[in-house]
Image 1 (tube, rainbow, N blue to C red):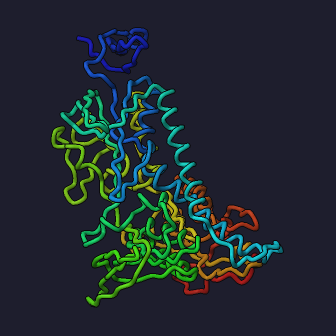
Image 2: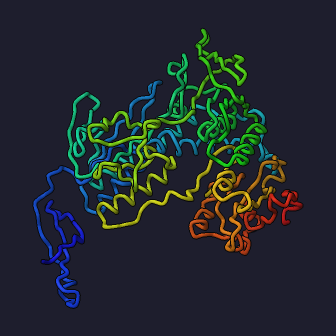
Image 3: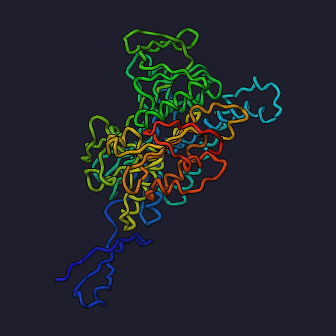
Length: 531
């Protein structure tokens, strides 16, 4: 009896399903073995081929890719206001309260720094010391751009025939999603496949006054007043970025560090970032955590905090910004109705190739357990998933060697393993660390601090000398590390790196000139601009 092998399933414009099969009857009969048979069946019993819960970068990328491949798709998205009442439009964290407004604020701070440096290059700037930012104008410019992206996103979904439902979605069963609309009405939709892409929101500490008076990154980019003297609680990349641009804009900024700076990153690099921030005027309170926040009669916030010895300290701030981590929004989805399992400690989903324990339910983005919480990761994973579901692709997401950048005042970009992680995996004797300090040409005339301009290359001590990590602190670090990320993806070796001719004078060329190992104990400081 012949064996039917599924080749592909396509959707016709009329809504019928076209299924192609191959029937290998005789291995020696090539003509029959290559014959395809098309069978038409009635429309699927579900309303949609794919329903996406969450209108952020990963969910939207999957939805648009799926539509391009012929699928019928709906997206449910609704933003619950923050404790301070902030909400936003379609597009998720990155567009509204993450990467985009953060980079714009970072750029504003760099421009302020450049204005003060310009006089060294001969620019005539009267009253240079009185130059200051107008928060209202900056905030308005940033929010106008964000709103324009919201609008373009909605138009794009409409043009691509993706149904957008402004509702909070939750599971009724594995194939049924209920959307709760703004007015409280509910709308049920059914789908053959469901994608969870709800991301996460900032966490608040369980201390008196935190919810009432504190803000998070959900609020800072649209704050209706100048932030003034600000306490940033948390020293991850969000905390450092916020403190960095606030300081650069002229506001007094303090970072409260509970344990270490930039946990999960190479710690030598992390400490250099913090040192440079201190040099630029950011204050750090180490090994401390807030105890309570009290609003005073003048509207300012009195914060008590506890140090490592249990001693209580206090100070007054205009703004307290919490950046202590993010919480996945899976609890609101009623996953138990669909049978989807989560990791109890994080409420995140452990998925194999984005597929949950329920075969027709998938997840991308920040809800995934032990995956990078980065927008490009979610976008790429979403597109690849859609291609596997509707385009007969077999390509899966590679979560290794994903580059990232911390947009601190002096940026830090990295790809691959950090020094501690590399040694823990391969052993100290099997890893070589090449490193160098360097002098950016543009720092010379204004006599900017070069003490923390530093890079390292982490290499396996085998016959190929494979590069397994690259780290860079300096101007435009994100632009620098992006190209080297592609090289590492192509199995870059140290000999190839050294044989690459650099572009002079650039800061990226410093990677091609690095030659001193930590093991040697030699001075990694340059002797001249061309050494």
